[in-house]
Image 1 (cartoon, rainbow, N blue to C red):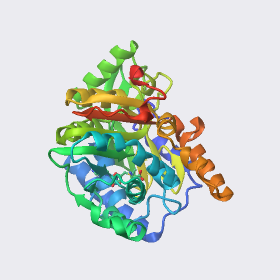
Image 2: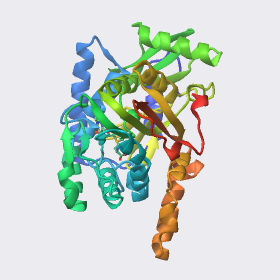
Image 3: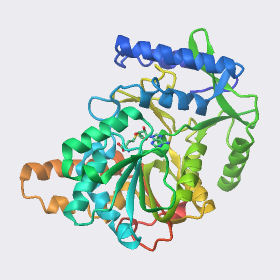
Image 4: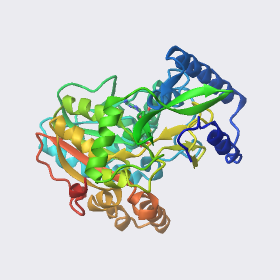
Length: 406
Ligand SMILES: C[S@@+](CC[C@H](N)C(=O)[O-])C[C@H]1O[C@@H](n2cnc3c(N)ncnc32)[C@H](O)[C@@H]1O
């Protein structure tokens, strides 16, 4: 647990001692991590001794050639560090393909833009389903920052749906005047998060410094007005002050990304699927150590300083903040519900009912359970639809409308 007032290196050592069961990285991976650490230390020195946590997270995930998403190690799937919904089951993506068809039908020349497409498996399943339903859009665009993942996506698409590969185009930024559906599964949680701690009744931005060969937490003296004013807003809305030592995250980068996406959308819907909560749950007094989690070879822990660049780091999404950012940017909240309700409302069980092979039925049934049961991904993950100039109604949002909880 982070304790106010210390430099957190004691906690760091405690965490490292509690992680002996994590498999050791290869010698090559350790070299990459050491190079990235040297670059982090140089950046800290240039910035006067420390970096805000969001900048540390940005570098360990996205530093060219060295960051987690840019350095060539396998991330998604059984051989990687974590598994996402499209990797668990093709039914997830096929159900999404059905779910978005009302938007494609409502919008003139509606296309799909997937942001942060991982291994590319979601794109292949969506395209295959849309082809089967005779509802293919003119183009399926992918915006992916990682050059390595972009290559993997191209390979997946060529291998799995070669006849549809011509539909897929990669872009380097959000297009202007986009009509259709912008899809992002587990994108927002992978964007750099700001972290704060209440110390002396004041919200201080958590920073990262380097001491005695370790990265350590520091409660920043520098005032971050945006962060302080957000913390005050949360306290006001939740009608209670955060306690001493309370630690949590604010995903300003995710909010800013939604505003940029809103500008690029002419008509259609931004569909966000991610793990997160509404504000009152996110910043509950009992969740006093935040939502940050790290994934390394399918083990979850809370030490973001473990082998920089070799593990994934994520934070939950405050969906109230995302809805506020969207409203500010001229979108309306067309729906907000749990992943379970969205998938069930969009007909995920139809595939089970239509399957005659008993083995396949068993497989589908276990995959649907993983995606929808509350103790699995069903409730932690939420789906939010943000619309502009679009009147489509998505059945996925009709089973349980949670917009009043935002
Ligand atoms: C956690 S992975 C999710 C991958 C995939 N959507 C899935 O569900 O399997 C996050 C993805 O977002 C990409 N990414 C991160 N920031 C991005 C940005 N600003 N624009 C586009 N892609 C981004 C990463 O490279 C990675 O592909």
